[in-house]
Length: 603
Ligand SMILES: [Zn+2]
Figure (cartoon, rainbow, N blue to C red):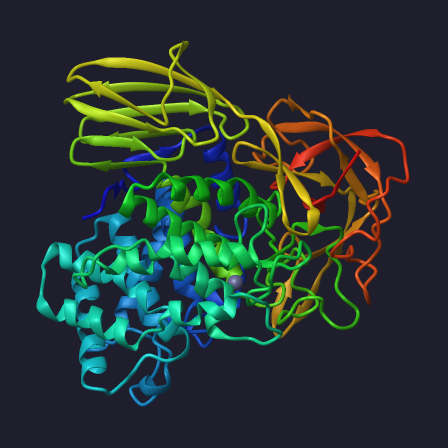
């Protein structure tokens, strides 16, 4: 039994900076992909001749909740048209994916798992009662084909078997039929066991593998949480064990694991794929809902406030395939790629740098995060992540006004048509917590709200600026959930071109970022100071961050990675200072498109 349940798009409405972020997303690539990207516009899923596997479902997985959260009628109609076109091609036996009967054996049924999840998302948003029978017949057909041995899991389906559990659990809750549990067992038995592969995570391999693949690993973290109940298993917090191993050998300052595109160790110049950012976020949302363990919510907000905005442009028209924590340039490598298995353009901002999966998949990041702001269970509501939004569900109204994570003050306006308990999750790094001006000492707050009551609750806390240790004697600066970096000033070089019939044209062109300021710094061990600035129209503005940190730095001899003149060396040549102290303004990692995040400290 889940600890917490999710609200739906008609119950949660984004406000403030979160609403602006979603509007920028709708005006950018997410809201327009069906108009200009062949793999969605002409997809085989809707009767066209372009890709008919993961790209349309990936896009819909974010586009649908985005459309409903913003109550954008045009987007809702376009989402509905896609869904209705897709289900119009469903075969009489229930099969829904675009391939012939003969091709089913070779068709990687990762797409079956994915579209089943997307149809569930669409139902949760639309309450369209045409959808549950479609999910029922497609999963029953999947069960028939798997249980008879006509098809089996392989490749992506084998490594993403648990993704089908979102829809299986959805059907089970509506009508528990025994074949659903059998399907769950078949998927687990034919699916990959990541614990067996965990020894491979201890050192990077220059070889592409499914079991070190960064997106698979981001998804995998939720596997036990979505499956144990239906499989009648004990919950063992497998996610924590696997997370600890991944973190020990492949961590980054912003809570990602390096993967370009498979696990890549602890170096600050290896990358992480954008698909992994949004899949890891979705896993953490489910892990928090299932367990109520606040560590997952803290990890979730760290990704959302750092890794996600860092790797997408301010206008949300372009993105990187991989981001690095020490990223002094985003320029195409003329020769061999720095990345282990990605090409030489994977860190450019563009339409589909390196590969187009993230182009379709990144869309789910912000909308699903917004939907995780509040959760509920029986007569209790919890504020999971304190971002500005309004909840209106079953006679409980809560409006949260805040500029968190840029400020640490929160005003809750509550109205109740029935008694309920309201819980506020307080992060472990919060200091000096105040409720309505009074000091409280707690790691969580709980309020009894009475029927008919109108109440305002003000909460505030302090967050300290900290130097946190990284491998190889490096350090990064954090304040609460925000990580800070030395920003590197840059010029943008625009590239408009056509490759493989895919057009790159402004605003969905490619950009190289060329550094024009120094980046070879070390921190001086003195107390930095936060400076709050007027918020920009763009929440994580790369030009106008809403908060910066004044810190002291000195130049050191850092050098370039062997064979490259656009990548800083993994480690500096020397940590002897070669200049006097100077003051510098650190930007939030999510605002600094070029940055140095992991630095040594000098005296
Ligand atoms: Zn991707």
